[in-house]
Image 1 (spheres, rainbow, N blue to C red):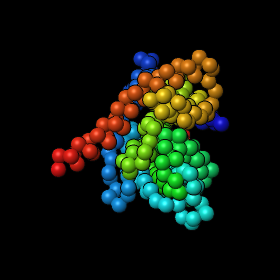
Image 2: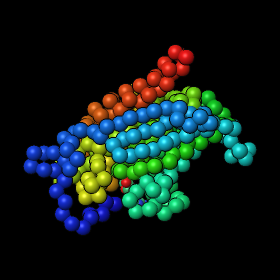
Image 3: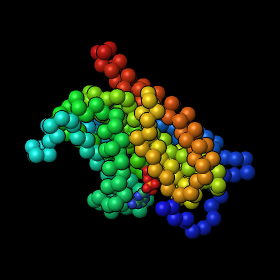
Image 4: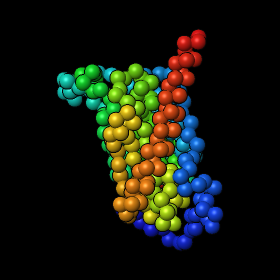
Length: 244
Ligand code: ADP
């Protein structure tokens, strides 16, 4: 549940611009790179505004044997924030929030992976947040999807995510840290773009039906651009390898 922070911060100025100068429907810049961890089967590094997250994927036979699923793969994402990723040192180890994020990311990835093609296999997705600045679950999921594809795992589609929310009573795209802290709602969402299937949707705070529709339509638009960044990241790796 969204807890209103103390104090009164004006998040949108008289010209309709946000504290970081963005328009209400403007994303922070996103960059994705694949193949960043040599030893891993697949990997990706994402910079989403000031968020910096690295993901490594390992595909192996599940062990111990009794954890194997005979007719499909299992996906285990583990989200972790580095101690230096936030201003106040994050206490090490899993807490409720990190367990929740690991679970929703695992579930969203499972919807995209053709699990029955990999019986008895475990797909481990290690997510390390190096710098956190709001929207890390969605940035993690977006990067994880690229890292899983980079590992050569058969997928129906790449999961793409985005957030929207409410700041100063207005619907805005891709919440900044201040908007996350002092705003009235936070809505992370992820889809499989080919079919439009929603694989993650969380709502923290209060939104009307109309605001929710506005938020989802802004996110749908933004996700088209983010999908392209994901595909370009995968393509650029393979075009470099082809050129060698
Ligand atoms: P998300 O990162 O997906 O937006 P939250 O809404 O739970 O997830 O967190 C918002 C932001 O709050 C994070 O991106 C991070 O910048 C900050 N944050 C989260 N957990 C902590 C923590 N334990 N200590 C300090 N800052 C944190």
